[in-house]
Length: 156
Image 1 (cartoon, helix red, strand yellow):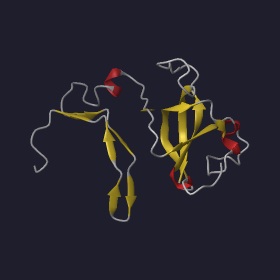
Image 2 (cartoon, rainbow, N blue to C red; image 1 turned 45 degrees about the horizontal axis):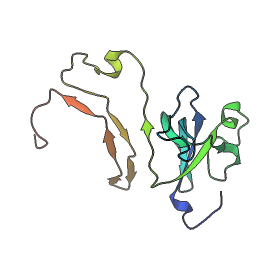
Image 3 (cartoon, rainbow, N blue to C red; image 1 turned 90 degrees about the vertical axis):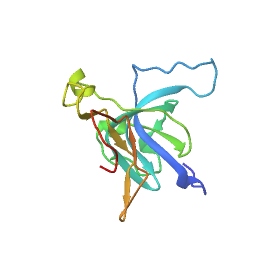
Image 4 (cartoon, helix red, strand yellow; image 1 turned 60 degrees about the vertical axis):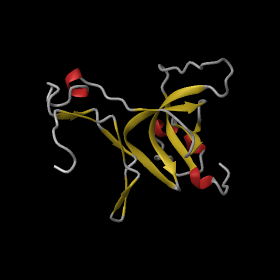
């Protein structure tokens, strides 16, 4: 990976292609082959960040061998076969993608939440992209949150 003035905006995802999920293009020959990859971590701004749990991302092509990249990555100096089999994909931070968070369990666990009756409870909530800098929180995003059975407003 060549160092350029714009290298600071490069995001490198580390993971593996999910072989049993296929992306079907809208039109034949519409650019690079798309794939779904399970991502375990990413590099950005000269640092490697491990995902709390792996997530699925849409990626382009089969990726490059992770141990051949010149950015910080996950255990790339390890002899562990897991690390040796990782692939990497480089994107600009402004590129669009699709992220899919997976959860498995019973409907009560993954859909209905702890209450199981659809009553007062929060279910399906995920917080991602939060950063704390000094005493300031920036970049926080909550997606997929549902609060049912609540009354009142934010001033209560």
